[in-house]
Length: 173
Image (cartoon, rainbow, N blue to C red; front, top):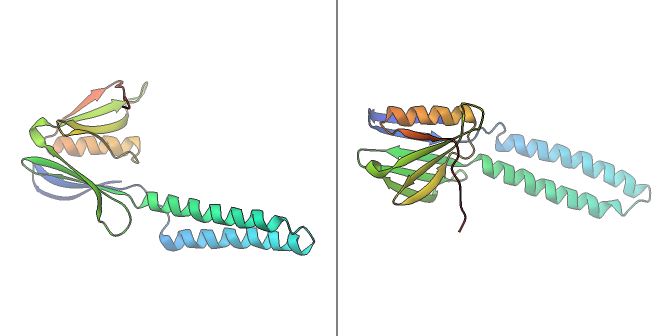
């Protein structure tokens, strides 16, 4: 989800990037409790019938389900805030509801390059990266193709043009 939070002038803006989180914390807990109730209810019924060895596996299943649903919920609370002013472009990445920055990267606006890797065979962007002397950083990795296209449009309205590339190679060192 790409939301423009504030625009003070045509060249200054604040853009909030967030994944589409369909369930709240209460909804996630409701799903978890209902799945655990069914799973543990069935395993207790088998244990009372004499198949007691099913209980450790049901406990393992419950633990894995809790860990996985917690991980998915935590990934859904990611936020990236792009602040654009006259001299700098600041990217703050947050996780959770504390909105404390996990990492922060500042780019000089004049030396910033926005690279958009295009999907082969379609006109939609596949990824977007900020690149400059400060380094290279992928932005909005959780966004859909249409949301990335909307972000490119919003950056263009602030005077930051994107360069579209068919392919660029990522090299790990």
